[in-house]
Structures are given as C-alpha cells and as structure tokens.
Image (cartoon, rainbow, N blue to C red):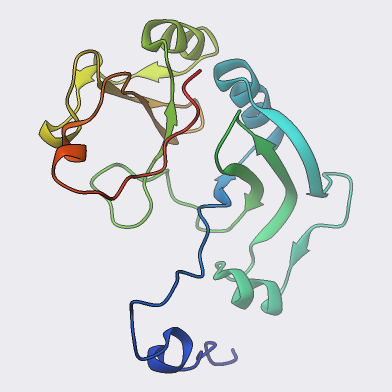
Length: 194
C-alpha cells in the first residue's frame, strides 16, 4: 500500500501568524455510512424532512472499490461503495450518504467512542420534531434536557436520539439568548430560527 499523503508543514499552510483570516467558511456536509441507502434516505426524509439533492454514485452503477479507493477514503481492504447520495436538511450542512459493504463493518459509534459521533439538528418545536422522528422509526434515548450552563435560557434544550440504522442525532433548540453571549463577542453559527 502506498504511503499516506503528507501535506506541507503547518507553518507553510497556515502562515506564521495564526491571526490571519480563516480559510474555512463553515461545515459543508457530514458523511454517513449506511448498509441500505434507500432505507436511510426514506428515514431521513420522514424524520427530518430531508430532500435528495443529487447522487454521485447510483446504485445501478459499478461499485467503487480497490486499493486506490481504499487508500483515498481509508476503507478496509475489500470494501465496496455501492451508492453515494447528497441530502439537504433545511439549512446548514448536507448529509452525504454512503452505502458501503465491508468485510469487517462495525456497529455505529456510541457517544463514548472516539471520533465524530453525532450530528445535531436545530428545531423550533422540540415536541413536534421528536414526534415526527419516532413516527418515522427513530428512538428517543431520554427526554429533552436543559442545555449546559453557558447555553442555558428559558426553553433551551437538547435531546439525543438514534436512527434505525444506528446513527446518533441530537435535536437542539435555543429560542432564548444563550448565556455565553455575555462572556464573549464571538458567536457560533446559528440556523435561521424562523
């Protein structure tokens, strides 16, 4: 197997002054590996109102695999990408679904595992969003809970859920000003809440 890509050292990529303007505008999409892209798409449509934007690899196409693909995407040898589809959920990053078959596929991560472990979606109506989610086949792991201290405010809450294919999805709502805004002039990106 070829050696891993070695980019230029940080000093030449980022400049010597870390105070330069950021080159990143925001999160473009989140990748999600599933066993059945049709079932995952149907669930995300029903539970979150997702819509398919496009497919970069249709199910009826030749699957992607082999040593180059395995190295480029850090796949287990023998893995096969059978379909790739980009979805949109209102505002914010897209969800890129990958239907992947692999010889040693593991169960989805838990919140205590290392690495990216959940996505969060904003809702102005927690109760209605969770009703829709469970009606589509999702599981609410515990009742909604108030946000942590610097994010607290009246009706500010979150709730962890699990999709039928194992992915963790957090629902978050913060209609009230979050307390962190009193301590810094910096602001996190917030979806349009109208």
